[in-house]
Amino acid sequence: MAKEPSVKLISNTWIPIETLFAVWAQSRPTQYPELFKWLAGSRTETYQPSPSPELIGSVLTAVSVSEARAARVITQEEIYSAFKTIAAMDLPITESIHFTWGFSDLPIEWREQAVRKRQWGFWLTSMREFTMEDFYTDGHYADPPEGTVSEESLKFFHGTLESIQTAYRHLQDHYGWSPEKARKVIPLCATHNGTMFSNLRTLLNTVSSRTCWIAQIDLWGPFVLSMVKSLGEIDPMLGNIISPPCFKRFEEDFLGCKYEGINENRCSGKDMYAPCPLYVAQIEGATRAESQYSVFTTNWGTEDKFVKDALRLIPTWESIWNRDPFTGKLKTK
Image 1 (cartoon, rainbow, N blue to C red):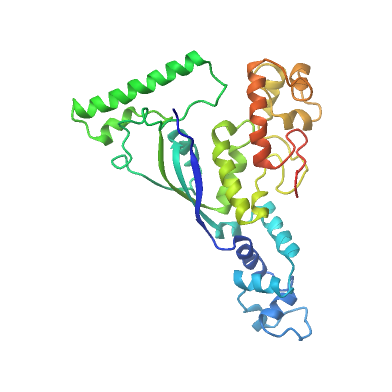
Image 2: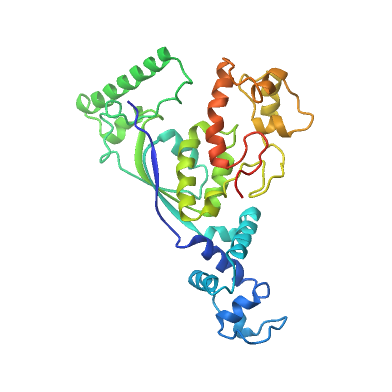
């Protein structure tokens, strides 16, 4: 039986939101005069439109931000407001926040998608350590999503994996191949362990592009859900930062669909798969097949296999984005 993949946060930049705010405020001393006067130990001085060089030269740290908040020199709302602005504008300073993730039983096919974002770093368990001789027997492979394939085809799939496992062993035992040579037969669905790391900017851009309804949410969803949960445990604001590419972060205005042609083909029936529910609900004048539209609004009991597959994905999509899957409205702000 295939093992469930696991992604856990190993470490991250300490108090990341305060760190980001410190970087932001450091470049805007006139925007936060009381904070910099407090930092310089001159709270009673009358603020001047142009701060003195000594105030500008004061270094604001993440710890200072936390202390200033405790002293009520600055509020949590101001910190969150700045964070929303920074995240929504996709500013380079989000690269100052780093995350290190540990994973187990991550499919090779997922890694091959992730490395397209060149800012991601990976450190993988060697195949000499994580032997693949029993990858099928030990469950180190990924099945297709439950309910998306027939029992007969799944049985054939498992039989194929078992044959590959046998071939992998035979190449080494009978022909003397090294593990590095024999691994050429290992399938993309095989899983492995390791570590990956990125900054906040890369994480947000990768997640936004790859968990779109069209862009393989089925493959990325389970891993992103784990990441979002970990981010929310650091700070609830981080847990709500993920946004689909058709919406601005923390906003509810529809920006337009990057995959309009694909969705139009799905709405018209040229493409057999179901369209994105946001597209169907948001695009004014979109070509709509009434049967497709009704599926997403009333006929939840349909037996159409592609519609059933689409409905299966909606809870994952909704959990990742923290939005209503049809209107795009934020569930919590």
